[in-house]
Image 1 (spheres, rainbow, N blue to C red):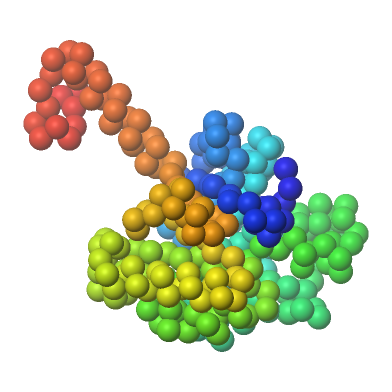
Image 2 (tube, rainbow, N blue to C red):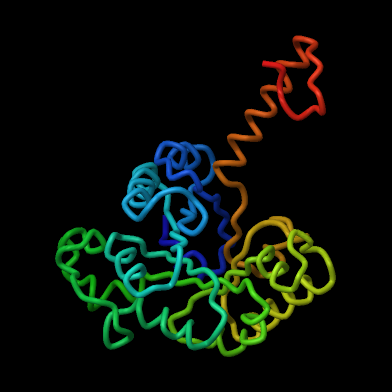
Length: 266
């Protein structure tokens, strides 16, 4: 499988699922059953960096590829994530061009940026097995995406999208709607207009777009709109929904009446 960044640059519409539970087994099972790209959620999900590395190892061993959403844009966090072998990074809540420039700088070795150097001893280089990693490979293989999820980011989107080193803009529709006082009401006119403004500016600049499935957009809608990456289900929802369906099937078979239809008598 071609690296994720190259697939997106080639115009492929890439689909993925979230890993929220910090479980290597859950993530591996998802890869083996139709979801070869897994986005590890370090912002809202369970775990720390080493737990995310364990998830990444399981995904990669099963033939998949990972993206890591880091919890914040601090230089030390980005440096450690890159050193530990994550080559596709998503950074949340980027609202200004200054923030975007700093993130791009932190993630690239000189002369492109100011990433700290320890290439011969880190997982990213195969612990030195890739001698050309820092000078020839790291910059080209890095997929760096930043999230547009606030009205301030939309106001600055033309400048943010133009920052060298930022490969894609990832729209977070629910937080974006919330910042405009429409939390969980993404289909209302104002959030939809904000989303469309980001889409139009990225199309104008030729900047790749990514987002989640939802906010009135299906897989096929996003593909038709030119998005390169869309994230759908997560491991929590898959387990919860399957558990709920199994409980419902059991109770219907046993003729058990469940108050409110939300749980089980057992």
